[in-house]
Length: 398
Image 1 (cartoon, rainbow, N blue to C red):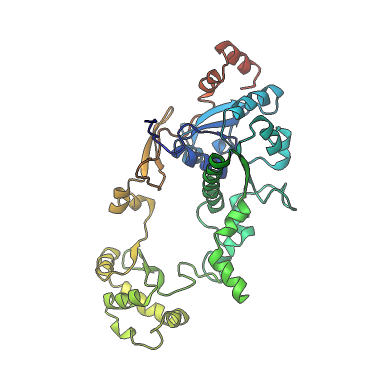
Image 2: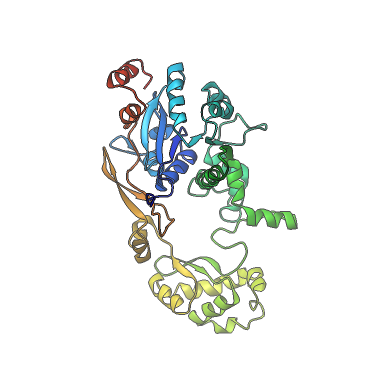
């Protein structure tokens, strides 16, 4: 009987040469699946995310958020000796993730063709801002830029308010998810054929892909999407409503839920009102319907409305802040928050992986590493002696 595999990617090695969010979070997701993830950082300061945002004991909160389950080494990729060491790492790797600009990638000798000479069956992930070619290929970009360029800002926010950014780095995180799914698909292909391959994902395309509902409507009607704020662009009453003490999210999008909603609010008379008796009429006449609903909802607090609406089987929920979110009984029940050991901070709370496997549970064993934390460990594994490692440090290769 063979060894029982404890996690899906146990025995696989991922080289993470990426920085900021899209690449690093993809590598962390693969680490959750049991892969050994070696984060290769430039020896002159490491991942740029280490220097952004707020810090705790000199450790970047942003970096901690997207780099769990990794080993960090530093390496001078602008030196021939550093690139030779990287080749030794590539030789033992299954996956390489990078997000260098195409010209920088070539300068470091990290273009796909050259990496394949070292490891022909490598699964190589190239993450770019705007694409591998085209007029913007060498332009820098950030999540703000992608949200604006992709159209996401044009459909976010209140009417007549102007463009609004989504409150999280949505383009980066979406690219991470696409890349992790692509890596798993490419590894499966390699298991079947023995062939590695190049995976290309750019953040502009990732941001555009999130808008398939709005963009499909535009293609079919030729009409620009309008901003709806907290309301749905497709149905009403679906949105965020004020109560006596806070806000409540309600989604009475179907005829069934509309009738239940009217019953909960003692507004049964609206069920047969020909202005609101179909989904399309409710949506078209939402400006007439909104004050009728608002008047009712302002008569009780959110907690009371949640009980009433849940009894009537109406989709609803509180609008949490982070202070209240982690006191919610369902959030507590789902146990998504993990506590991971960290060499400087002792312990770091992190949002864990939401996927649950019955036979191969996720591996969440360490918080994001400090810069170069595992350099000696990895280099000894590559066959370097302690004296050789000391000499590499002296020469600033690591």
